[in-house]
Image 1 (cartoon, one colour):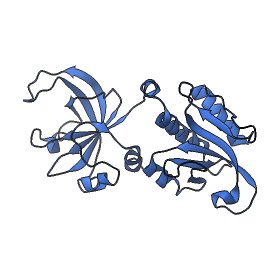
Image 2 (cartoon, rainbow, N blue to C red):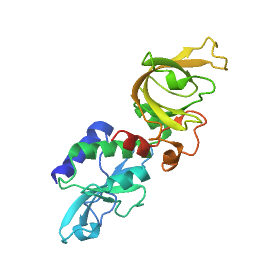
Image 3 (spheres, rainbow, N blue to C red):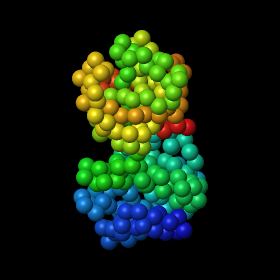
Image 4 (cartoon, rainbow, N blue to C red):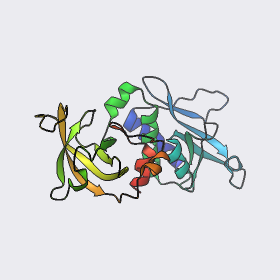
Length: 245
């Protein structure tokens, strides 16, 4: 029960969430809900070990959390993490609350579940640094050599990129791959339109990491559900997770 209490203390401190016990027949089942919509972001419940594919019939507590499907598949390779019990197996995971999974990892996964299930209004308030996939066309700008002599460049801004956000630059054909990971330093800088394109705002981005052109190609991106990069878009959580491993 120690980790159950740890989870309850964490959601109370971070999200002012008190558990809801909606079923009289199952008093140990505790639902974690969003305060504005009532939508679930977690469920604590007792389960027999053999229901999780483990040996024995003694009861253990698990925490059900929502997760990106590809990331969920990766996480289930870790001891103590299973397909969501009584939930959609592709979008939910169950975490064994017996010490197998470290508390820090559990708290991080709670944060992910909370954001995935939050309303748009709450997501905007919660929004921390976001990961963007931004196209770069070598026909208009020599992006291949842009960071040869500096680690800070200016770039067109046409979306809600904020200071601190991470920008992955996808270089179009003939490269067709992510080449750079950058951080937004300044945003919404008025453009002087000397770029030869219709650009209202620019931003300053700083190079954090380079990638080999053969590593994150369009073929690889398609495995994460990215089939085209025609404008700034959110990076899939599962892709960010694998890149940052």
